[in-house]
Amino acid sequence: MPRNKHKRKASVHSKSKTVKSAKLSGLSALNPKIFVLLGLLFVVLGGYLLVFKSHGGAMPGFAMLSILIGVVTAIFASFSIPKKKQIRFV
Image 1 (cartoon, rainbow, N blue to C red):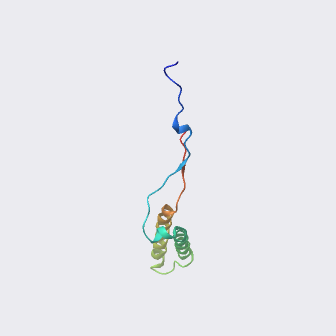
Image 2: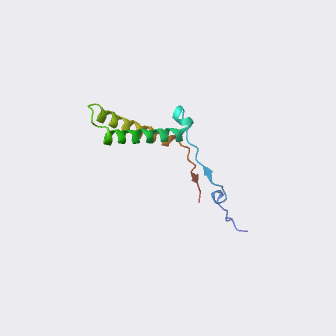
Image 3: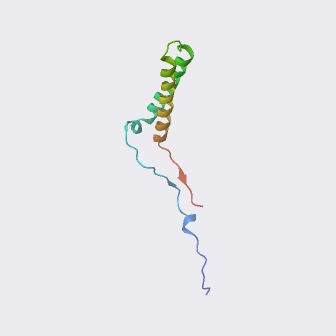
């Protein structure tokens, strides 16, 4: 009888597993799509103020602040959206 038998690796038969990310706490983790839309709304509002209403002294600053808050809100909310990634062991 042969001494070394051919054995198959267990990873060939394993099923794909999903990656579980850490649970995020906070208000944006409850409804991340709403906060992405809210961030985009701030960006649109800032663009509108910058283009059409920039006659006053504080309007350009308020418009830039609104754009900055909108971008940061949308980025943080997009991190909270659950993603399903599959790892395949080949």
